[in-house]
Length: 314
Picture (tube, rainbow, N blue to C red):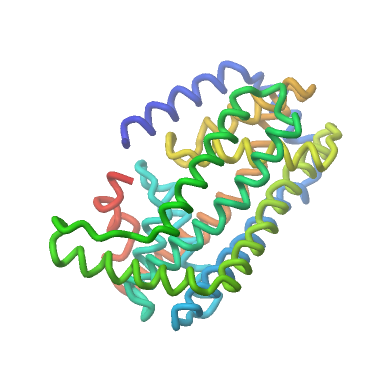
């Protein structure tokens, strides 16, 4: 999997380099005010706080509690590990870090899984709306992504609602863990109000992501309706977030170029928008890096490399 990610990243970067005129790209980046570069950073900070709040709600449903500041730090550290490790695994690292707190392994895994499960239907809703409304008519590949995402979301929720069955052949040590996670998920499923609130809190994260791209395009001289951006960005992100590259490098810029060019956005400007938007992720990962360094100073051996071997198959 690691070799696939590295190979896709290299191929995407080579393609992007072949499409870009350095002079025009530089002009595009220098043509916008400096404050524009801070917009993705503020947006990612807001989304990190929302993600931490959702995770805190789910942990509360399981009888556990952690300060939102600690959860935000955990998310930042996971973001750095996801960028620093070639095999990725940000979610695995977050779950591992959370399990080291008083929350424990079972509740940590259950909360992380439910946080992901409640995000899926929200994203699928935007994707299917975009596909059915015809907003993706110029992008057959994004329509396919939207349909696949919707089908996948339905399958995941069907499996979760049926419950996790523990195979008899599973070793007792693992069977105990799986049973504990299953029981914790059952508790969360029974809290329909809590699950609905967590799902509702996923809506602002999508809106914030779309607002950033909408503002950046406007600052780069391209006017889009916010409805169009709501249709395009979730579909673009669904491709960018696929675990096929190292931190989305190359793929992100290629997706922006390929999707926005039919709408009149020059390749250089589209790539510039993708690069500026990425500054938010870099800022979060930078904070995570500093937190890793502080943790390693206090407790040697707690850097991201600690989780490298466990994430090789992620």
